[in-house]
Amino acid sequence: MQVSTAPDSTPVLSLTGALKTFGPVVALADGTIELRAGEILALCGENGAGKSTLVKILAGVHSPDAGQFTVEGNQCSFKSVADSKAMGISVIYQEPTLFPDLSVAENIFIGRQPKNRLGLIDHALMRRNAAALFVRLGVPMDPARSAEGLSIADQQLIEIAKAISLDAKVLVMDEPTAALSGSEVRRLFGVARSLRDAGAAILFISHRFDEVFELCDRITVMRDGRYIGTHLTATVSVEDIVRDMVGRDIDALYPRTETVIGEVVLSVDKLSRKGVFSNISFEVRAGEIVALAGLVGAGRTEVARAIFGIDKSTSGHVTVHNTALPVGNPRAAIAAGIGFVPEDRRKQGLVMDLSVARNTALTLRHKFSRFGLINSRAEKQTAATWSRKLQVKTSSMDQPVSTLSGGNQQKVVLAKWLATEPQVLIIDEPTRGIDVGTKAEVHRLINELAGHGMAILMISSELPEVLGMADTVLVMHEGLITARLDRDSASPEAVMHAATGSKEKNS
Image (cartoon, rainbow, N blue to C red):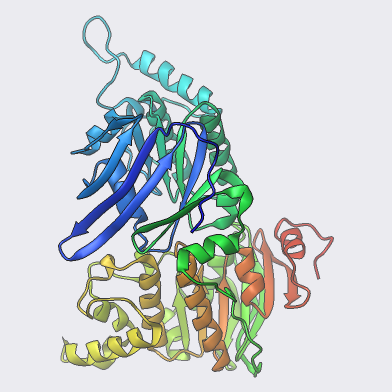
């Protein structure tokens, strides 16, 4: 394909034709990337495209089996993470790992603390140096405070400050915004731009196209472990990048088709939880997709947890087919026909050390056990059936679910609940952290479920997903429903007005 690039300049880092295999598995067939001083380069690709393996090569975790690797024109061969850091490369992961019992300053300078004339750690100088780093970043942070209890966003800033203190030439940000609020993302972007303007080379990895196109100067795309191409952000569209990523056009990322809307299945009447949300009322009918939209902290997830009985509501009622559910009783909700796919699939939806089969059948253990013994054969047969239906990519039903990609883990959570044959499916952030190709598959599946008469309550922070999939959009702000929009009247402007508490365009 034709490659669009920025004007010629000597790259700070260049990796060309990198090969990495693990036994018979080729994780990276052609890892190629070029980072330049004073720019932010996006790395895009589906799960399994080879992005993580490439980053681990840059970080010194893996050594390539073949290929050319240079930093500032010098050939490199990293044997450890320390080698990578010594060459000025720092990686900021989605969830940093700080020492919670140490202070902010101690985390930044751990292992290289400044000493006084007596050879003792000079804590005052260390705090001053840390404070100077945060001044350079343009963000307030108390160097003396403990790292325990800091938000993910603040932890990432500490890692960035550490990178600056090491005179890092290359900063790799691997899905840094996945757990951040909108204001935290804006702050991080401001820091990234200031570092770029100061001459740093930044590699930004994200599934969120709006962030990529807002922040990055160029975009490199990988597919199936191979380099596909690099574009100037200003010269391409989202459709162009999607086409590169999946090798085909996605005509309908949100394949919502008209379905016959039936009778009311789920009814929520004046549901409240003191201090969290209040007076929540709505209905979901058979074949209908109702989306709860709003900003982080609006109370959407908390409403879903109360409906399912994980959290106790303080007043109000939830009924399924006119049968009232007891408060705070998930077993009763499951028995009534409700399935719940949580936002955090790794911590709340799956048991990561267990197999695909065991995770899929967790909700049906009462069917597969007798006298305390589980019928493994029946368990695997059920899991295999749902894996085929949902196209879960796994080597066997015994494969640990922790080894699957994020998209396939999401499918296993869906399989676990669909195996119960629910009448209502509550699905919180159905496509968070998964690539665009798998997103299309999940959207197709949700659409098919609605087409077969399932009532679906979807929570999503992605506005295009809400507008593309929902028949009805309920917008929440500070624990209240501030707008009810049908498919025709739901627009980005109307949703955002309601999400921020404005009354102008609420319906």
